[in-house]
Length: 247
Length: 231
Image (cartoon, rainbow over all chains, first blue to last red; front, side, top):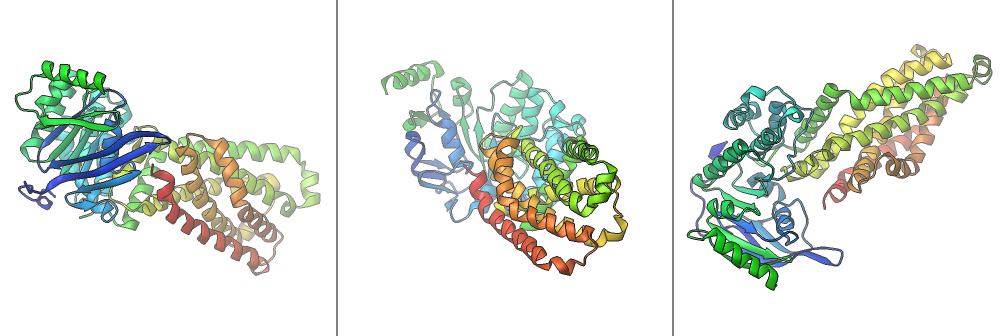
């Protein structure tokens, strides 16, 4: 299934194009006229205070939520025209595991593999369990796993179809050191393989370390953006806080 | 490769739901227990003399379909509780499958569970209310299947609505029973005819109504499930 991907993502065409994207809940605009391009094959950290609209933006990008207005294009294709093709290209890691507690770990991954139409879902499920160091728990129900193990299985679920674009929503929250280490390694592998990664996080040092670029949101708007290389996390946090207070 | 096809996706989802039910037996055991209690209560409410005097054709249809309707609500609610526990409905919506296939898969697993329930409940009603099920097995099976099909479809669609707004059985019952009333009236009329020993052709109009509602509920479900489950 790895052969389905282009060996080198197109460096010119943005993986994600967002234009005047808004989502309102009643009178409140959770995301307000956001326009941004995210280049193919880079990792982007999305920062902002609570209620800034980061998770809503991520849910809009992943098609879990419909926009009130605006356009989203993934690899040049819009959700309106090619919903299934785009969903095949994206994976989502959330603080919700999206797993079935009563199904064994292997059956969980196999189910999602079948749903994505993989030719050999069982083999792929076994590979991912091995990668996430969960092979010994393959036949145990997902509900019996610890929080860290559940998150590792959830990562495996999101990568079962080897997506080109991966969205992560606060992936490190509540993880034990081992699970956090596995997740860092996974994100590192995704970056090595030039997958496009968009990660919402409150952990500024880790977010800057694991990204090539950062975006800053506040009150539903994209207020700043830049490159992550050479950023001092403490100084960044000062600026980040100042913007939050000022806006 | 853009994900599983319509029928394959529906089958995969139904197999997953049935696999969870097989492992936990939470939904089906609750439905069977509920049905058993209702049948026992009704069998005590009507003593044997009354049952013989009125005949099973007067009593059984109403009791049987009331039991199945309320037991169905338990199953439909459980069907979406499984998805709500870890927000796995979102993962289903993120998958490259038609939303109609998700409806079809959920409906199919609910239909199979209702049919399994009926395999227990219908013979029990024959024992409690003294009628010869084997003599009417074929027409009874046709009537039960046709009406259960529609019930499973609308129960699945409205179960999704109730789950979406965070309400359980109370909202589902409020929505389901008025919408499916014509189906239940047809079910009672057809079951009554079968228990009276009449040919199915004598209730062909009611059977056509049942088939019509089955198709209507199927198309409504396939076309609207997307708007019910998406935010």
